[in-house]
Length: 90
Image (cartoon, rainbow, N blue to C red; front, top):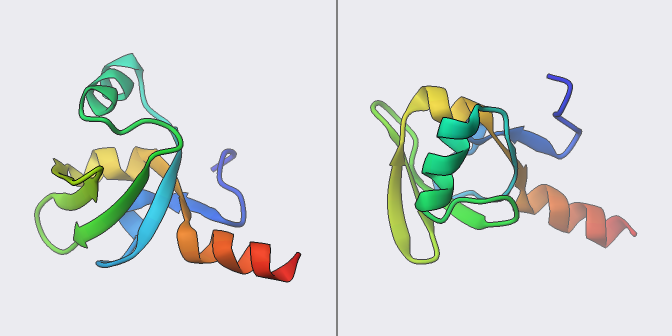
C-alpha cells in the first residue's frame, strides 16, 4: 500500500499484547467517524487484547473496543517497538 512505511502496518497484523499508535485510517468518512466516536483517532495509542478468530479486541484510554477484521485492515498503525528501536538508533 502506498501509505505504508517501514514502521507502519495494518492493525490486523499486531499480535496480542502488542501496542501501536494509530497513524491513519484508509477508509471512508463513515469508518473514520465511527472510529473517532470510540476515541480511535490518529495519534492514539492502543493495545491488542485479542487477535484470533472473530473481531479484533483492542484497548485505548482504558476502553475495550471490538473491531471487525475488515476495518482493522484499514487502520494503519506504527508499532511501538519499531518506534522505540528507531529512537534507540538515533
